[in-house]
Length: 242
Image (tube, rainbow, N blue to C red; front, side, top):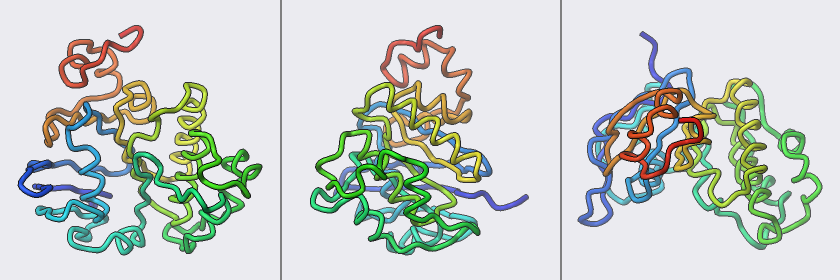
């Protein structure tokens, strides 16, 4: 069997004495997946542990294309072909759109390099706002820029933490279409989402995180149609028609 694109095994992570991730296990191959769960379940800590950002103590295994990542600095992990769009976007208020994209050294990991002009073609609104600072952008524009900045590293895998947070429905729909387009071009997405509609629109494979563990695995169609699972695991009212 070929090596999974990403394989997480026995992953534990701590903030001080708090045991946040508890033996997290999952693997993804040539498909995008979504990890869903309530707030405080460890989803953002999982992203940080994979990317080598934090927490300060993590053990287990995170392998990308067969290579162990745990213990490597985040810049080396990014250089292997993993892009990261953090929760809250994390832009620099004083830097312009164009400066955000210029600050990322372009590298090719999949045979085709992303450039600033390709990002502007993907998000024409950013081209119109290229001289504006990060603090002068709307929430949707900030998210576009955060995605564009991650794409400039030419990732094979894009990890996105709550990309729909705080955005208007029209912007969310635009982002969903953009993600589908990127997936058709060969990019694989690990989506961390609390918005069940977004998660089930982007990935058929759904992992449910509860109290720092992957508690269940299901499909988008099964989860969308299971009102009890939505209430039990996510604490939300069922999706329309579910």
